[in-house]
Length: 312
Image (cartoon, rainbow, N blue to C red):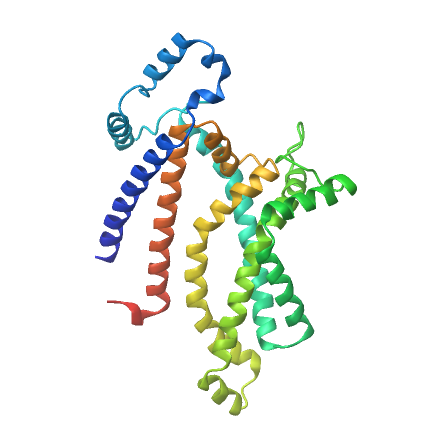
């Protein structure tokens, strides 16, 4: 029943996102033609172009036409690339998954290690240092950090490539890895800062519980207390937070991909928005909303698995 209810709610949310995105895109100033000066110079070509893509019809007719095509699995054709939107997204999705997945794994691993370590050694030099650095990581905008790293490591110290995913004619694993260093570093910094502070506080809260004091009074070693009592109690909120962070991680790649010219979905969204590519933007927004809904459902299911008390 839970899954069925959540699927129904997801359908309603996706419909609402579709309506909102469609209205916002068509009410925003500018037209798709502004990205194509050749078409703007020929009024006849403009009218033919609008008729071909059904952009000369009233807004309700355009919306229901797009909705009917969406129901049939036709996500439309990009107004700029003149190719199916789904095909363009599928081409760019692996690059985004590679970038965001690498940043997520790196940030979560370091946050779990140092968050627990700083909680156990509260007030130590390491704890104070990482608390300060995590606050800086939360405060510094990713685009500004990316520009600083580009200036330092690609201009003054030309150690790393400044843009793209691979060098033309190369494309080896080592070459792709060198291109990934700076964007992964920028993207993982903010993620690490949030997770570090959350894990540190969660471990501190558990360590202050009465049953932890009782275990210490019985003479149990700290390592056993941590793995038997602390870690299971921290795992549930951490898993939930990780599942809900997946959509945020995807949207965070938009800025990073734009700064480093990473050929992923985030950069595609930026250029589509600048060019008023309605089908592309609506499909990506629909995809993002679906990702949020699935992440929320995954978080609920994981909570039920890790904590049977939550079962109805």
